[in-house]
Length: 458
Image (cartoon, rainbow, N blue to C red; front, top):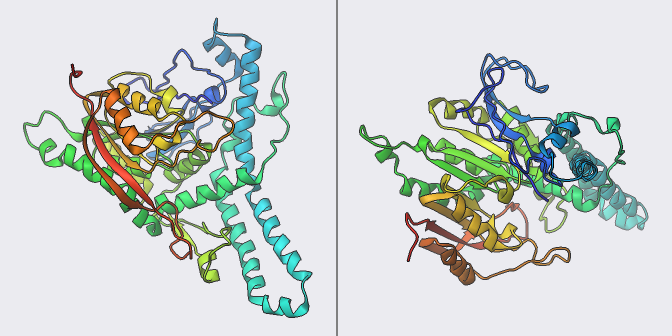
């Protein structure tokens, strides 16, 4: 699947006082998610902003996740001379089908979760009376789960509230194709549950331990590489706001947010629609702290000492995302771009730093990721990485994959042209762990910093 992006930049033309810049590449309408993923970026809208493509009217400064809409004619025009229109139209429908399938997965969460719980309750009714009596507390817990699922569903409805209107042409108005209601599997709905756990990890007080383990080393390294004391000196030739940091695989955007908070101009990049829907909601529609409550572990029925573990709630966000306004008021920029990392970022020597966390093992070919990072970094730029090597395609029967060891990865890094500055291994890192669970797993991650030399080595 290819994903591309329309980029926003306050240095370019504005539309109705909204700082939106459309960057149309040659493959603006690339197949499978290309068209539908193009044009998604967080941007700042001024107090004079009106409306752009059905964007809600703004009464004060805030951040909005703008989905610029493209109809088929627009895409066909952008692709003139680059393929058969019929094939393009088929691609469009496939993209929309995928998009709607993710929406349907969110909306199906309550039904799937309730069915699993009701099956257990029904099974209890078939047991001998003595066993039913012994299971009375367990039965009460199952009924509590149903209540928690309903509350999670309320949050999910808010997350997907605007998703149905993200396209210029509704599907039922499509000229030549009609996409049936997407079929959602349990695996699809499981990803919704994973998204709730990601909210726990990135945007709650309870997730702070994981963020300290995974994000703080990267933030500390940025502080070391670009000391604020130097940028604040009177005759300094640079400031942090002049330094552009890219965070591929940004998830719900917390690491990128923290980097921007340090004073850097930071752009997060994400492909997963599950993550994009949730980050849109948190960053654009949560104007204060601790507004919402979720139950991230409610469907994790194994290894619970008590129902307290299963029914534990968390509130989010732990910080006010509207602080983004202040972040961008002094020249710094923070944005989130939707799209495939390999497709979106084509310009060479553009970034001062690339920060990756639990990312490089998402590739079926880690060499390609490393080479891309080297290409887009400026000479003298840095790549900071933290994470394991839990290769996502290692067991795939549908896609080829390689799984080099860390020793092999270091050789790939050097072969790409990087200079490895420092490395740490066996760094304990948790990932979306219920601290009350009887089962706790952690990675022993690697952490390293590389530099792209100012001149190629001979």
